[in-house]
Image 1: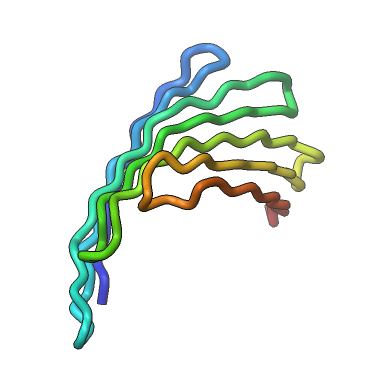
Image 2 (image 1 turned 90 degrees about the vertical axis):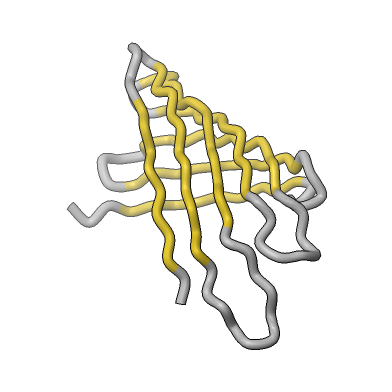
Amino acid sequence: TDFGASIDVARQFGIFTPFVTVGYLDQGRPAGFTLYNTTSVSAGSSVVITDNLVALASYDYDSANAPIVAAGQELSGSLSWLFTDKITLTGYGTLGLSSGSPSMGVGFLASYGLN
């Protein structure tokens, strides 16, 4: 069983909302594996571009979770379009800064709100 906790602090300043997230994960102890407890930190900001368009950029750090895995560091960015009051479309990308992160990644997310 794993146990984790994180805290996120954010404050809006006009169109900008800087944030910092800090987390800790106590890894379970499966037989035959050596796993480390991990810490994570993310810092960045979102910016409201228009009423329906929001951008986000962040730096993310995750400590190593095993002897053969390096700590992960990456830059992330996303652009979210509030298509309707229930549908949000988001494109995102990451750029790895360490051997513990993928070199790069891209993705797309479609969200639908039930309320």
